[in-house]
Length: 511
Image (cartoon, rainbow, N blue to C red; front, side):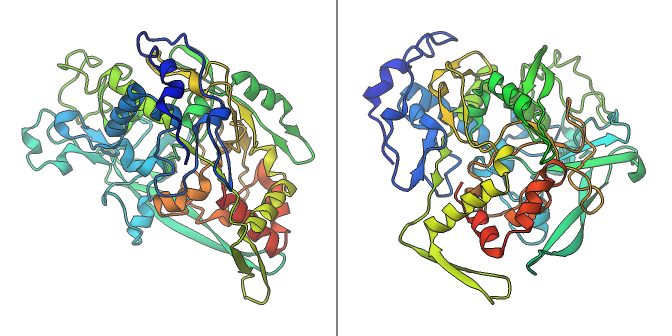
């Protein structure tokens, strides 16, 4: 990878941290960065030409060009990855002990159901998944809130009875059973789908009857292109929503608007576009129980197992993490580079065959990828997985006001419109309807998943579990779970011959 000399743009970076805002809007341009052969830049000045296990977890060149940005990026990276302890504010209940625990290498850690079957884990015993619960009418349970925290002080520390928060229990534990169903493509190729049946056991308080409960599970998202997502031009996304009406394919994308920080904002972050920011402070609070200025109260405040109240955090000696630290984590996420699309080798031949090896075809890797890209458009996948978007001229701001102009005025290729689409509920009973409402998103509504980096997930995180809860064990299963607005594209894919389907998978692996 070609790196810029620090002198090329270093002068423009010095003023960034003199004040909370930055008046310099010079930024990098694509003319400053040399693209590597066989790659297509995916995120303008943040494009990385890496295809290894650190592809999601490396700084963009505009970060590396500045000592100040590099220092703050590394501080944020450390806070993101290093495990919190009780003395540092972990708990009293929590789902994980660091951001990097669930987002290993800034990707998607192996979910616990894979660990249970021998898949390995960075830290055995934790769920590496978020467990959301609601009543059947959509409201929350007073003793639990919206998330089940499956760890508490009492099981982590032997002397828990001597702690201020002694005896705090995990709120519950997740169990999953799988239902399997076999299908066949029109050309005779078999495939299988599996549907999870979730339950919760070991409730710390009164058990909730299954018939009164909705459970939805989320495997954490890849942290690829977070900065670019925050720098998107809302007007462009809203224009896409107005344009995203293709009755011949049953497609009608919608914006999700949410109330956040006292404002009505366009949601782009999360499985249902239910957030307008990167949820750094919420993640530290809800996932780890680490208090901060935005969420000063312990997440189990008000639960019956709490002996002491905090009066919204005002009686604690101090918050567990500072706003400055939170902004360094925010900078780390914004400053991550985005792996460029890989065209594949033009000289390496790959032979693929159908399921019973009765047919085979040999092409160069690049030709397979090119054929797969044509199949992607043939299936109209681009109507939702929009290939090209743009960032605002001045980039975006971090949570404490620091401006990042270097990701502004960029042409990017996230393969998403960041809109909500109804994914149906007809497959295997409930399909992708999780009955969980987020802002304007209903249970069947999901934000189009950005596909950049998806082909490197196996290298980065050692697994190919896809969709919100990891039910799909590969690209084919993920496609075949598409219903509702994805039904027409799924049917086109289903009726392709095995070569086209195989090529489309090779294309997805190139992203």
